[in-house]
Length: 289
Length: 330
Image 1 (tube, helix red, strand yellow):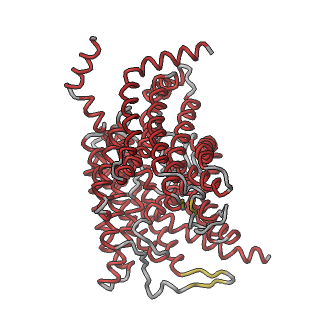
Image 2 (cartoon, rainbow over the protein chains, first blue to last red; image 1 turned 45 degrees about the vertical axis):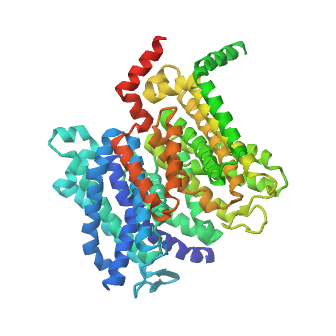
Image 3 (tube, helix red, strand yellow; image 1 turned 180 degrees about the vertical axis):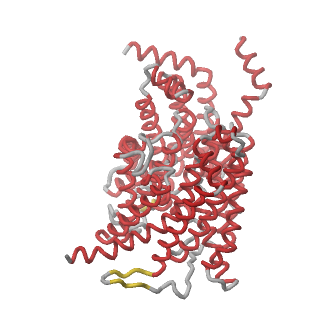
């Protein structure tokens, strides 16, 4: 019984942390599912969201979550422009070209952050950052709970958006068959640009919640991108529910192994699990085919 | 045996036109450090050799085998760590170099089990995770004691004080020339023909009786061996190793940049590209903070404007085609 009681906190923490990973990974997963490209710069867009929250908090004195009202449209615009002016062109050259160009964008963004915000580690230390909630034997920080709520909101929004709006249906059509969608009069280039815009808007949200939960540096983007990729591969590429489940599995494996083997070993355990899952079920938990 | 020897003869005959200039350049480069050129030149030439060997191998994978491999740092770091740990066990460094390369190749075989199940872009992201995992392993694992100690702070390479910079320079030259020859041989062998068939059409190659999995595995393991070799030699020059830089994404940036600038899928591409990259490093050394931004802009720009790279673009021009036609008439 004591083992179970001991495990309760890490498991709940893992599920909630999985919420943060889900917000980071959902944007990436959406772009992969629709445009069939891996946006290697996604992690850096998330960090940009974090810096935006940081600037809003320190210079304007706005709560980071409130600042998203401005942050989301700005990131949307950046994502839209990246797809429209760079990646849509790369798409016509080859698959490798998109990957390499996204990689180039990632390098440019990371070194720009270093210039603007120095390589120092930053975090969003709000008044409620250190609050925690206790339910029975379980103690979790408040921000972890906020992460999970954000994940639910983002996922429900995405689900309803893709089902109910015209743009959402166009995105789904382009994801299923690019040529057919084009023949039906859908401007697929525009749809792709909107998709990356939405993905970047999610990155703005992810960045703020990331900053509330952990501290970050200009080069943290790659680490979180790799976590997000692990999450997506785990859940099955291109599946939204899969990404959510993959994120929670990843989070739980991380915190539970941290509980048994120490904090230093927790990421190693999570990545090893991803590679083992890849070897056993290459398409992931919710993968198609 | 006879068949193999005949094959080798045929390949050597196809390579003959290139072997003479390559030999001359090798001799000139080998003699350079004795002529007393500035030490900085030696450093940049050494970096050129190391990056060239790695870029050649990346080109073999991405340009010829259809494997967009995003984890070369895994082989570099593993090779470097193997050699460093062995020097702490009083095994001479030259044994460590070979051992490092072998460990990298064995690791490639091991890792191929999960990642070779992934195709195309899936393979790319799968391999991006691999160096990350290794970095965590070497942050935790503390194989030997030393002044810098384990747990992420790294180790100096033990007992290489008597190894001169010039000797390491020659090792670098050897691995660079070796990598050019390896790629040259592979492309003119049956393996190269098979790879070309796979690159053009995966399923047609498979139905013509080519074992796609095996051929890709061969080139993957060969690339791991040579990349690991270049990595260990780099760490002899560096004199110390630590997990953050050993498994860093920066390796991939440099290697990819060199291959893409020169021309992915051309034999000369990595050579031209690596020259440009090393020149760029030399010119940007004083502006460290904007150096990476410029590298990123160049990567994006080349990919959008001239995706075939410098060599690929030259080969497409009319003048070049005229030249090759003239050459073939004789």
